[in-house]
Image (cartoon, rainbow, N blue to C red; front, side, top):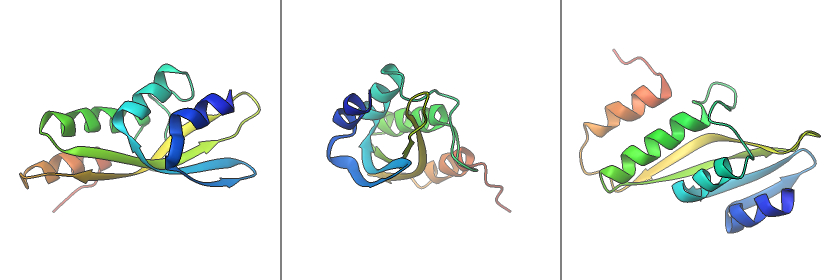
Amino acid sequence: MVQRLEEILGNSITEYTPNAIKFQGLSLESLEQVIQSGYTTLNASFNAAPSVGSFIEFGQRCKSIEATAIFDGVVINDTDGPNLVIDAITVKGVKDLDFAGEFVNLCGVAMN
C-alpha cells in the first residue's frame, strides 16, 4: 500500500521519518489521485490547517484562474494505513490581488 503512495508522490518526497513521509511540491492532480486511491479523506487535516478537501477546492479555483497550487504535507504512517494531510500551499501565477482574499478565507484568518 505504501509503495503505491510513494509512486503517486514521486519526487515530491523530501524526508522519511519512522512515523511519516514528508513531501513538497505535490500537484493538484497528484493530490486528487491520492484521494481516489484512498490514502486520505476530504475531511483529513493537520493541526489548524484546512482540510484536504478545502485545499483541493482552493487548488481547483486556482486552476480556473490559470494559477498553479502546489501542496506540501506529510503522510502519517498508521497501522490501519497511511493518511496524507496537507500543511502548506504555494500558489504561482496569481495576477489579481483580489484572489488573496480567497486565500485568507481558505486559512480562516480574520483580517481587520
